[in-house]
Image (cartoon, rainbow, N blue to C red; front, side):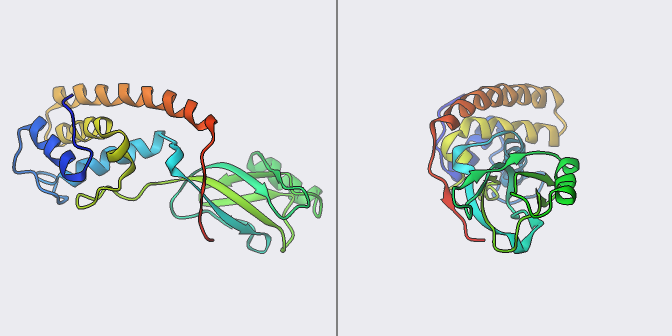
Length: 211
Protein backbone atom coordinates (compact mmCIF):
# COMPACT_ATOMS: atom_id res chain seq x y z
CA UNK A 1 0.00 0.00 0.00
CA UNK A 2 1.36 3.42 -0.94
CA UNK A 3 2.56 5.77 1.77
CA UNK A 4 -0.37 7.66 3.32
CA UNK A 5 -0.53 11.08 4.87
CA UNK A 6 -1.83 10.44 8.38
CA UNK A 7 -4.47 13.17 8.27
CA UNK A 8 -8.20 13.03 7.62
CA UNK A 9 -7.77 14.58 4.19
CA UNK A 10 -4.87 12.26 3.45
CA UNK A 11 -7.10 9.28 4.23
CA UNK A 12 -9.86 10.59 1.98
CA UNK A 13 -7.34 11.15 -0.81
CA UNK A 14 -6.12 7.58 -0.33
CA UNK A 15 -9.66 6.23 -0.63
CA UNK A 16 -10.22 8.26 -3.79
CA UNK A 17 -6.97 7.01 -5.29
CA UNK A 18 -7.57 3.32 -4.62
CA UNK A 19 -11.20 3.42 -5.75
CA UNK A 20 -10.60 5.80 -8.65
CA UNK A 21 -13.53 7.81 -7.32
CA UNK A 22 -12.55 11.47 -7.25
CA UNK A 23 -16.17 12.39 -6.52
CA UNK A 24 -16.07 10.96 -3.00
CA UNK A 25 -16.90 13.65 -0.45
CA UNK A 26 -16.59 14.03 3.32
CA UNK A 27 -20.26 13.32 3.94
CA UNK A 28 -22.16 10.13 4.79
CA UNK A 29 -24.07 9.34 1.61
CA UNK A 30 -23.51 5.66 0.78
CA UNK A 31 -22.57 6.35 -2.85
CA UNK A 32 -20.27 9.34 -2.42
CA UNK A 33 -19.52 9.72 1.28
CA UNK A 34 -15.99 8.90 2.43
CA UNK A 35 -16.66 9.33 6.16
CA UNK A 36 -19.21 6.54 6.18
CA UNK A 37 -16.68 3.94 5.06
CA UNK A 38 -14.02 5.09 7.53
CA UNK A 39 -16.48 4.96 10.41
CA UNK A 40 -17.65 1.47 9.46
CA UNK A 41 -14.02 0.32 9.42
CA UNK A 42 -13.34 2.16 12.67
CA UNK A 43 -16.18 0.34 14.41
CA UNK A 44 -14.61 -2.99 13.44
CA UNK A 45 -11.30 -1.81 14.87
CA UNK A 46 -13.01 -0.63 18.06
CA UNK A 47 -14.48 -4.10 18.59
CA UNK A 48 -11.12 -5.86 18.41
CA UNK A 49 -8.32 -3.47 19.37
CA UNK A 50 -7.43 -2.40 22.90
CA UNK A 51 -4.84 0.35 22.48
CA UNK A 52 -2.99 2.04 25.32
CA UNK A 53 -4.35 5.35 24.10
CA UNK A 54 -7.87 4.07 24.73
CA UNK A 55 -7.29 3.64 28.48
CA UNK A 56 -9.03 6.07 30.79
CA UNK A 57 -10.39 5.99 34.34
CA UNK A 58 -13.28 7.23 36.42
CA UNK A 59 -14.16 7.23 40.12
CA UNK A 60 -17.05 5.12 41.41
CA UNK A 61 -18.80 5.79 44.74
CA UNK A 62 -20.52 3.00 46.65
CA UNK A 63 -23.75 4.96 47.02
CA UNK A 64 -24.25 4.65 43.23
CA UNK A 65 -24.03 0.85 43.20
CA UNK A 66 -24.83 -0.91 40.91
CA UNK A 67 -22.88 1.36 38.60
CA UNK A 68 -23.88 2.53 35.14
CA UNK A 69 -20.90 2.17 32.83
CA UNK A 70 -19.71 5.26 30.90
CA UNK A 71 -21.22 5.90 27.47
CA UNK A 72 -17.85 5.31 25.76
CA UNK A 73 -17.14 2.08 27.67
CA UNK A 74 -15.71 -0.86 25.71
CA UNK A 75 -14.06 -3.15 28.27
CA UNK A 76 -12.83 -3.15 31.88
CA UNK A 77 -9.10 -3.28 32.49
CA UNK A 78 -9.21 -3.21 36.29
CA UNK A 79 -11.20 -2.04 39.32
CA UNK A 80 -9.29 -0.82 42.39
CA UNK A 81 -10.77 -0.25 45.84
CA UNK A 82 -9.08 3.09 46.49
CA UNK A 83 -11.00 3.73 49.70
CA UNK A 84 -9.45 0.80 51.55
CA UNK A 85 -6.59 1.39 54.01
CA UNK A 86 -4.45 -0.58 51.56
CA UNK A 87 -5.92 -0.25 48.05
CA UNK A 88 -6.46 -3.56 46.25
CA UNK A 89 -7.83 -4.86 42.97
CA UNK A 90 -11.16 -6.60 42.63
CA UNK A 91 -11.38 -9.95 40.90
CA UNK A 92 -13.40 -10.23 37.69
CA UNK A 93 -16.24 -12.72 38.09
CA UNK A 94 -19.70 -13.56 36.73
CA UNK A 95 -23.21 -12.46 37.62
CA UNK A 96 -24.09 -15.63 39.52
CA UNK A 97 -21.09 -15.41 41.84
CA UNK A 98 -21.47 -11.66 42.45
CA UNK A 99 -25.17 -12.10 43.25
CA UNK A 100 -24.33 -14.92 45.65
CA UNK A 101 -21.79 -12.74 47.48
CA UNK A 102 -24.29 -9.90 47.75
CA UNK A 103 -26.70 -12.29 49.45
CA UNK A 104 -24.44 -14.43 51.66
CA UNK A 105 -21.57 -12.05 52.47
CA UNK A 106 -23.37 -8.74 52.91
CA UNK A 107 -21.22 -6.25 54.78
CA UNK A 108 -17.98 -8.10 54.11
CA UNK A 109 -14.99 -6.88 52.11
CA UNK A 110 -15.82 -6.19 48.45
CA UNK A 111 -13.92 -8.79 46.44
CA UNK A 112 -15.41 -9.30 42.99
CA UNK A 113 -17.13 -7.49 40.13
CA UNK A 114 -18.98 -8.34 36.95
CA UNK A 115 -20.41 -6.43 34.01
CA UNK A 116 -23.70 -7.13 32.30
CA UNK A 117 -24.79 -4.84 29.50
CA UNK A 118 -24.25 -1.27 30.72
CA UNK A 119 -24.03 -2.15 34.43
CA UNK A 120 -21.12 -3.02 36.73
CA UNK A 121 -21.98 -4.84 39.96
CA UNK A 122 -19.80 -5.82 42.94
CA UNK A 123 -19.95 -8.58 45.47
CA UNK A 124 -20.44 -8.17 48.30
CA UNK A 125 -22.18 -4.84 47.66
CA UNK A 126 -20.03 -1.85 48.68
CA UNK A 127 -20.82 0.55 51.50
CA UNK A 128 -22.18 3.93 50.44
CA UNK A 129 -18.87 5.65 51.30
CA UNK A 130 -16.59 3.18 49.49
CA UNK A 131 -14.67 4.53 46.51
CA UNK A 132 -13.23 2.69 43.53
CA UNK A 133 -11.22 3.54 40.45
CA UNK A 134 -12.49 1.96 37.26
CA UNK A 135 -9.90 1.78 34.50
CA UNK A 136 -11.39 0.87 31.16
CA UNK A 137 -10.93 1.00 27.41
CA UNK A 138 -12.97 3.84 25.96
CA UNK A 139 -14.38 3.85 22.45
CA UNK A 140 -12.56 6.55 20.44
CA UNK A 141 -14.62 9.43 19.06
CA UNK A 142 -16.29 9.01 15.70
CA UNK A 143 -13.97 9.45 12.72
CA UNK A 144 -14.16 13.10 11.67
CA UNK A 145 -13.31 14.09 8.11
CA UNK A 146 -12.50 17.63 9.27
CA UNK A 147 -10.16 16.70 12.14
CA UNK A 148 -6.78 15.03 12.52
CA UNK A 149 -6.94 13.66 16.09
CA UNK A 150 -8.27 10.18 15.34
CA UNK A 151 -6.19 7.43 17.01
CA UNK A 152 -6.33 5.08 14.05
CA UNK A 153 -5.61 7.77 11.45
CA UNK A 154 -2.55 8.88 13.40
CA UNK A 155 -1.22 5.48 14.39
CA UNK A 156 -2.39 2.90 11.84
CA UNK A 157 -3.68 4.71 8.72
CA UNK A 158 -2.98 1.73 6.43
CA UNK A 159 -5.25 -0.51 8.51
CA UNK A 160 -8.07 2.03 8.62
CA UNK A 161 -7.82 2.61 4.87
CA UNK A 162 -7.89 -1.14 4.13
CA UNK A 163 -11.05 -1.43 6.23
CA UNK A 164 -12.66 1.56 4.51
CA UNK A 165 -11.85 0.09 1.10
CA UNK A 166 -13.47 -3.21 2.10
CA UNK A 167 -16.60 -1.37 3.28
CA UNK A 168 -16.69 0.70 0.09
CA UNK A 169 -16.48 -2.29 -2.24
CA UNK A 170 -19.10 -4.24 -0.29
CA UNK A 171 -21.38 -1.19 -0.48
CA UNK A 172 -21.04 -0.82 -4.27
CA UNK A 173 -21.49 -4.59 -4.66
CA UNK A 174 -18.07 -5.49 -6.00
CA UNK A 175 -17.55 -8.68 -3.95
CA UNK A 176 -14.16 -9.67 -5.35
CA UNK A 177 -12.57 -6.35 -4.43
CA UNK A 178 -14.48 -6.34 -1.15
CA UNK A 179 -13.11 -9.78 -0.25
CA UNK A 180 -9.57 -8.75 -1.23
CA UNK A 181 -9.54 -5.69 1.02
CA UNK A 182 -11.41 -7.49 3.78
CA UNK A 183 -8.69 -10.13 3.89
CA UNK A 184 -6.00 -7.43 3.85
CA UNK A 185 -7.76 -5.67 6.72
CA UNK A 186 -8.09 -8.87 8.76
CA UNK A 187 -4.41 -9.71 8.23
CA UNK A 188 -3.39 -6.25 9.45
CA UNK A 189 -5.69 -6.59 12.47
CA UNK A 190 -4.20 -9.94 13.50
CA UNK A 191 -0.74 -8.38 13.48
CA UNK A 192 -1.92 -5.36 15.48
CA UNK A 193 -3.68 -7.43 18.13
CA UNK A 194 -0.42 -9.29 18.78
CA UNK A 195 1.68 -6.11 18.73
CA UNK A 196 -0.60 -4.05 20.95
CA UNK A 197 -1.11 -6.93 23.36
CA UNK A 198 2.62 -7.01 24.02
CA UNK A 199 2.93 -3.24 24.36
CA UNK A 200 0.16 -3.04 26.97
CA UNK A 201 2.32 -4.93 29.45
CA UNK A 202 4.95 -2.20 29.37
CA UNK A 203 2.74 0.21 31.31
CA UNK A 204 1.17 3.46 30.20
CA UNK A 205 -0.18 6.57 31.99
CA UNK A 206 -3.94 6.51 32.29
CA UNK A 207 -5.97 9.65 31.72
CA UNK A 208 -8.21 10.50 34.67
CA UNK A 209 -11.85 11.04 33.75
CA UNK A 210 -14.25 12.73 36.13
CA UNK A 211 -17.34 10.76 37.06
